[in-house]
Amino acid sequence: MKELKWWQKAVFYQIYPRSFADGNGDGIGDFKGMIEKLDYLQELGIDAVWLSPHFPSPFVDCGYDISDYENVAPEYGTLDDFRRFLVGAHRRNIRVILDLVLNHTSDQHAWFLESRSSRTNPRRDWYIWRDPKPDGSPPNNWLSTFDGPAWEYDKLTGQYYYHYFFRQQPDLNWRNPEVKEAMFHSVRFWLDMGVDGFRLDAIGTIFEDHAFPNQPLDMTYLELRRLTRTAYTPEEQKEAGRVWDTIFQYQLEQPGIHELMQELRMVMDEYGPGERVLVAENDNIAYHGNGSNELHMVFNFPLMQTSRITPAHVLANQRTRLAALAAVSPGAWPCNTLSNHDTPRMVSHFGDGQHDNELARLHLALLLTLKGTPFLYNGDEIGMRNLRLTDISQFRDSMATWLYHMEVEQFGVDPAEALKNAAGFTRDQGRSPMQWSNTPNAGFCPEEVQPWLPVNPDYASGVNAADQIGNSESLLHFCRRFLHLRRKTPALVEGEYLPLDAGNEDCLAFLRCTESQACLAALNFSGKPFTLDFTKAAALKDYHTARVLFPGGQVLPVIRFDVPAWGILVTEVK
Ligand code: NOJ
Image 1 (tube, rainbow, N blue to C red):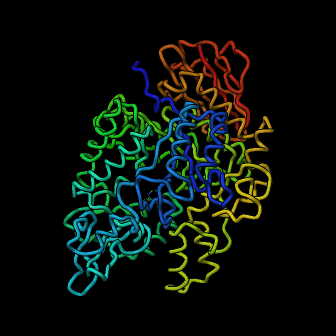
Image 2 (tube, rainbow, N blue to C red; image 1 turned 90 degrees about the horizontal axis):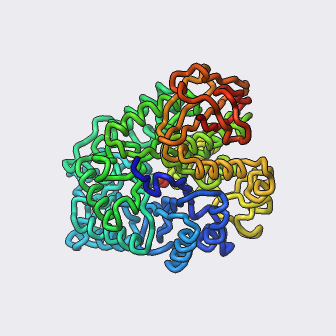
Image 3 (cartoon, rainbow, N blue to C red; image 1 turned 180 degrees about the vertical axis):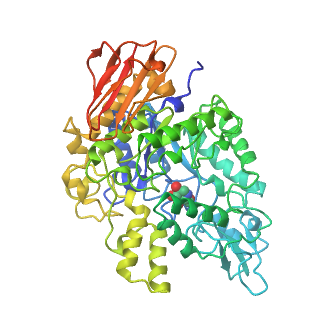
């Protein structure tokens, strides 16, 4: 077997800089704080960090609206602070990848300020400008995914500009080669500094159908949002997905994108093939290209697109996902995650309210035993939950505040009802400050300072790092033990995945095998204990004993074992 690259063996940990660690005590996370927490990350046992945007930004979209691609947001520190963070991480064998937002800039970026200044400005064509229709209305009926129509009228020059996300995030015109040149300059800027790769934001939105045809559905943005927000059953979700795909059919996954990704890959490969990694915020395996000419990884989002993680869901997901990857190329490597800054917290999303602690362990164990590179989200290791906001002034996610104001002001929805809608919908739920200790503001920032988003009050009941460090039975210790186990068990990192029939629908069992090691993982997603008997299983006919690696200890003379309620068992079979 070919030696795996670092990013295939690594466990990634996403840091949301604004909420991770506040080093200067102003209520906002920063590089000083991140540097202070590097030892924590090393002890946790992760191998790489994905840093959500750390660039200067007006923060209309929490940093995904960038106003300078080659600098650091002043509230996070300076370029020197960033360098210190990078050096400190590398010294601890932790790689660092950045968030690369190619589709759009902030409307405060110098490029856009120039572009909007006149129709003849040399940067005019760096963005997408179109004339109004004769009646003054937008060039077509496209919607933005965040805030109403996709076109914003600019009085100064009498044209509309296009934005797929907020109106403060104008789309770049990637058909203009100067845009590519400028962006690749920034890519090299960070690679030259030593960063280990990028998570690519929203690549599916980079190109639009350049004939700009109308889409066929007559639906307002608010109607669309309501439809997706209230799609609960699988049928409703399917229907909402169909409507979504129809409405955005000319704005997503358009021709040109694969060629662009190939060019970007060539830039990465200048730094040594496979040394700097690209991972896409996209689950389309077509982005693997021929297996070596586009992206290294794309997220397996379908794994988390369910309300409950069940063995049947995981088995079906792995069956289709791994087969599809294998069809692209034997080298196309999986990448699994169950949460990020756009989703609810893992515990809140997949918990049942009664066994959240047990389920949190099962979900982490699942991510760390499936084949592929796992991505954890900061705070999941201590079981952080969704933050419930109770006042609209506390919201920072403009998607939710926009929706709230539209509902109340334009559609007369009762404010309490609109608040409830926004609170259940906002991405703020999963972005609250990291809970470091059981002291006011969870040790994120000083007591007298108001953090940028409220701290979840559950820090006082054990959901904080310090308390968990002091308790060997905590989720944090579980996570550390599991990360350690994974690191020293080659089959869990490199092994092929082979599903096993556990004989009941609540238990998930599978093998991970290399030529020299085979591990059997069994995860019991129920409150009933089971005996799993593989003594007659065809897949295990060459194996006769099992050494328990987790929770640890004994060697079993046969491959038959008891899995307790909500139990997690990893054994090495021989
Ligand atoms: C995806 C990011 O994850 C999300 O947070 C952001 O709002 C959009 N892309 C726009 O950049």
